Length: 494
Image (cartoon, rainbow, N blue to C red; front, side, top):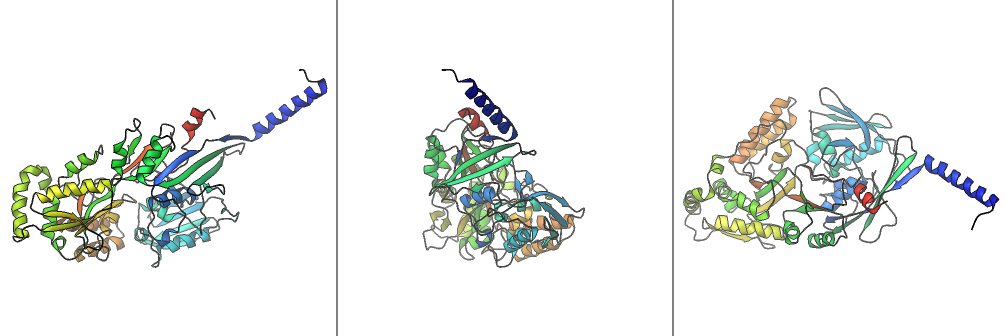
């Protein structure tokens, strides 16, 4: 059927108008990406109230960015601050904020941001990373959009710390983006949305992420069924769930995470209080066998508190006994055990580990290694005093200070006051070489006293669908949810 001339003309005009409108403001809607974080449903919380769960950390990183953030590979990128400058002496960091608004439409000011950051590092704050900003003397709003952090001594790792979700900018339950939580979110799921305009504001892109928290086994099954595009927050404890099913090729990704994974004395009495016993138990662990049992490619055994690649510190030297095969050193270790335990028929070491399949693997390995010395290993039951407990933590920066300050007196039951004095000297040192020398000496003392029994690096894993292109592993095991759906769009033809 042909249109009358008048109707055809109107139709043509309408098409021309629509074409001009589309050219003036084109919009590309990315398909939604479904993301599950292992753990409870994510919620927006104030980091000053205490440690973050993994789902909370992922959510804050994406709806409550800090002054700066990490990109997919762990490099520093702008966050709420569009740019920054550092003075030559490293004692002043000056940030210029974006021209941005809170979700309620009110303007974000430097004074607000300064106040919120100060709250994270006050003595009343329970932020677990507040001590990492101990060198910050003042946080000052210089203008409406410029904020300055003044330091007592230079901290080259400051930007890495500020990029952590523990320093996300949160006001009540509101953040500063890059995503917003849509009102259409359903119970148990958060609908995260962001709209990006290019510089000339002629085109916009809409990204949508459906975020949820689930137990590890359920998260893996959801991924296998194709209901989830990305699973985040995996640790050594829940890795066996991912190993139990046949995953798509290259779906399982391991972050090259840095940090602490090992055992720390849980009380100042009992066998763990004796440094000789701690040294004995450390030398008796077959670290490579545990790594093989967990089946993590590229993971290396570690017997020193510090690891290679930290700022200002020489690569730590592995103890000589690490070069001797475990089978060859067991006879001497068994003789030492008989001497130290003074003829006790079956000394018992109780270890506090999470209730997880990965922890059962670790406990089994410890039972075998320490059992060869005549020592019985048991999990610490609820209400029962443990001799050792697990530390499994990713380092927030490449500074060695975080590693060492985790074992200060007051932080752990067994410590070395002399090492604490060295850490205090490092904290107030104004010369980098002097600070690094203090830290190296403290590390040596802590290793000699075996205040920590290192095993390897923290294990962090994700499941990544081939529909997700914008994912990369990094040493901080932190993952933004921006730009994940590009390949997904192409596959769906959107």
